[in-house]
Amino acid sequence: MLLRQAPTVSALSPASPRSRQRQALAVGCLGAALLLSACGKGDAPAAPPGGGMPPPEVGVVVAKPGDVGLITELPGRLEASRVAQVRARAAGILQKRLFREGSDVKAGQPLFAIDAAPYAAALQSAEATLARAQANLTQTTALAERYKPLVAANAVSQQEYANAVAAQKAAEAEVAAGKAAVQTGRINLNYASVTAPISGRIGRALVTEGALVGQGEATQLAVIQQVDPVYVNFTQSAGEVMKLRRALAEGQLQRAGGSEAASVRLVLEDGSEYARPGKLLFSDLTVDASTGQITLRAEVPNPKGDLLPGLYVRVRLEQAQVSNAITLPQQAVTRTQQGDRITVVDADGKPSPRMVKVGAARNNQWIVLEGLKAGEQVMVDGFQKLQMMPPGTPVKAVPWQAPGSAAAPAAAPAASAPAAAASAGQS
Image (cartoon, rainbow, N blue to C red; front, side, top):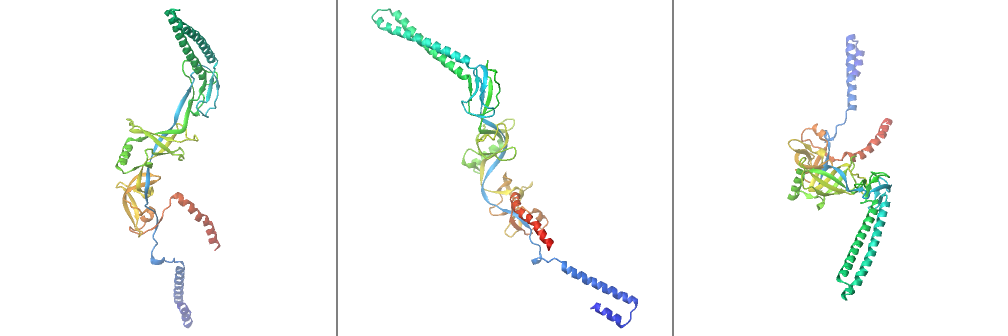
């Protein structure tokens, strides 16, 4: 309206130059105010319904009780279940090696051949001596049997008959000694062919062809190790063992699997877990005075020979189970000097801190022993959002997903981002 009145006034009566400047300035200020008002109305964001900000989203998990095994991870070392040293029990020159180094051999399989000619000759000599003794026994037996009726008729003296019987007994002893010599000769001849005492994997040969072995002592030729199954030796603190046994006796824990043999898993050097489980064989009855540790041994199947003796591994030992236990991700629990604290979200979305008691950890999760009930929602993610809000601010609870499981679904929106950007550019 002022814009229309300005030219009317100037048309009715002439104005001074100063008044015309004042009128022009007023018109310019009014136009600028109208322009700014129009721009402000176009750029102002629409207020959300209800007149307030939406509640922040936080990730929660629902407490679910169940049977949880208590896992203890300890360092261990693998050992062959059986180890046999192959030694030369016959003296002589080693002629042949009859196996491939590093291969699997069977019990009784020939491994080395020692020069057997001297032992074959000794066996033949023993057999000849036995034949002579048997011939002498036949002669003396016939003489004693012929003298027996004659002595009854007083045809021969009692002394002659006694001499004949004694000669027969001596011939029988010579035959027995000859048989023993023949058996010894055969044993020594068999020792010339060195065989595997057990089945397993044989290492490298410790001697070569042409070497003199078994001269004065049993020369070690090779080593055979049985690696299926394989043993793993490890140690555990005596205090932990006593605490575990006390909890089992009081009924606080249950023995894993309901049996005496605890389940054992191996973690290799690269962090991967060996596929086949093992079983605990025994716990040592004595405690090492220098370390306070108890030695334990477990047996693990190794049909493919992947586990090698001497390899260092991590042993995951499940000795007991907790009934009706609740597990929470470790990031949901804050450990302080006053105790362990979690944040519980009620049905109205109001978060509240709570002190709990946690036990051992398993698979990046704490086992909650006290302070939490089944069905309650525990906050896992979104703590930074609460720090920016006033205390008691309600939140929106959404199911929490582990980072590994949430990575796959997040890939779809990321892939569609270029398409959205392209459509925005076209519009």
